Amino acid sequence: MSDYEVLVLGSGPGGQKAAIAAAKLERRVAIVERRSMIGGVCINTGTIPSKTMREAVLYLTGLNQREMYGQSYRLKEDVTVADLTMRTAHVVGREIDVIRSQLSRNRVTLLLGSGRFLDPHTVEVADEQGRGTKITADNIIIATGTRPARPDSVEFDDRTIIDSDGMIQLDKVPDSMVVVGAGVIGIEYASMFAALGTKVTVVERRERMLEFCDLEVVEALKYHLRDLAVTFRFGETVAAVERRARGCVTVLESGKKIPADTVMYSAGRHGVTEALNLEAAGLSADARGRIAVDQDYRTPVPHIYAVGDVIGFPSLAATSMEQGRIAAHHACGEPLKGMSDLQPIGIYTIPEISYIGRTEDELTKALVPFEVGISRYRELARGQIIGDTYGMLKLLVSPDDHALLGVHVFGTGATELLHIGQAVMGCGGTVDYLVDAVFNYPTLAESYKVAALDAMNKIRRMARFAD
Image (cartoon, rainbow, N blue to C red):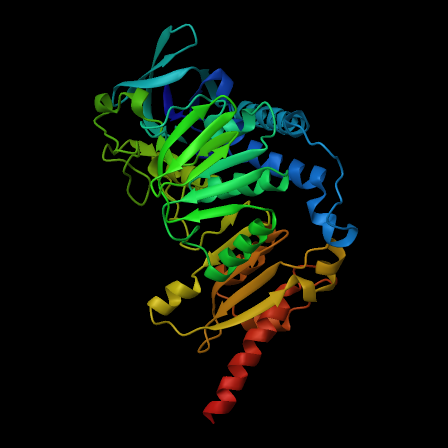
């Protein structure tokens, strides 16, 4: 008999939920994780620290209150890294406690160390002293996550030239910073440090940022970041980063030189699979360390599954959790239906972006007719109360059957607000529901009714023209 029925490698969102789901199905479950990484990258260096830091930045800089109290308003004049990390350390500590408690309550055995395959059913768990213990399992779920990709041409020193993990370990708030890469992580940190007063320059080889988002929303974010003195260099590639006594100089292929205290590379992420000895299990990873899976998250080896960032897109904590739960049920012979195609995307820039469904560009390309309904926070009483005059909510509506085709939100609480639209779309509802619904007043949720009425008025007007 195997030591465990389900063995999970990694305790991030995907691994944690997989282990608990299998335990709820009354299987013998263990999870392998290094002592210093309980909760995975998400809790220790990624999502939770960065989002907590963002909250601290917003609070201490008084950024959200400046519409009412003036552009010079600040809660604290000189925000230090200590101010930011104090809150971060508290939240991370509490989250690790919660995870330990959940695993313990559900009788999931925590094996401290790093795992590597010896054969398809056997994993060696090596502790901090290098002592190995052989563990056998009927089913194995790989949830080892990712690490920031580091181009070989860049000499990282974790002080002046850093990756996204290094952002939460800076010893001081830099006066100037170059962010290489305008992806989600790069733009989130760019907006945070710009809010702190850092002079930020974003270098991106593509012609626009966040290409998967609504163009109007991205333009609004760009305008807002430029207002925080962020400089954008699109269509530019970094040729070299030269370290100097007072910081470093980023040299672009076009010949431009940008001096800065700190350079942060946000060049995507790489699956943490090198040390797993996948070959011994009959598996392999691609050039970016990702493992291929089917729709049930099963790898080519039938009893081994993989979930979370290590399998690639969309690499979000929320989707990783659901992938882990689905994989665990399949591993335990109690399959669930697959994940819905309707997945929310949340980007924690300042201000936030969130959307679900399709964009205007996607619908236009697919020759799908749609009408747009827009609500602006500045026209809502709640928007005035909280001092958000730039936020907006956009509904994309089918003129034929009034179905919601997409919901796009920009501004305060966007990632929370989106779930109303998600619920309507997920239940097959139409814009008519939002038109007839009564929302609390004054709230930001009321923007759904305003946008729905805007869309319906346009559809009605078109119908009148057609008569």
